[in-house]
Image 1 (cartoon, one colour):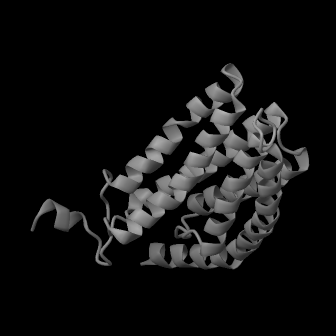
Image 2 (spheres, helix red, strand yellow):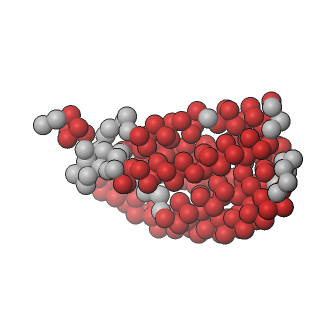
Image 3 (tube, one colour):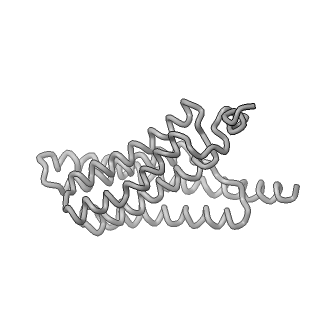
Length: 204
């Protein structure tokens, strides 16, 4: 049996492979975060920083699509992709709040939800629970918020279409926040099931 076959999971995914295109994309997203901070604060270039943050948001969808389309869903990717999402959120939102380009209450609701979910995930992992897969609602909320925050930043840049960017930001952020909290609420029964499954697996 070839190494590629051995690394492929029974459902056609990439199994335990580490070096896959989606995993590389997720790693690049993380590595570009310092560039975003440098553009925003060192270069004081909101336009370039907003476009880079938007790129990091789009690539979240790209690596997920590529993983499913070309059967490169891997165990590492299931951890690395949401980790990249969380880091993009935390770094991006905090930086934009410091810059003053987004209302504090919007940032507080976004970060509060992210911190709460991250704490629950860590607690479940410490308790030996089964990992919870990201839901479609959660991914949709992530996409909308990753559209909204670059748009907020662009709405404060020296460009001719700041009003359009502001409208895009509000149209995206409101449903994005609603869906993000809906996804968080759905984590409660999922967390109970994951904890129960984890205990059952340890019992075996």
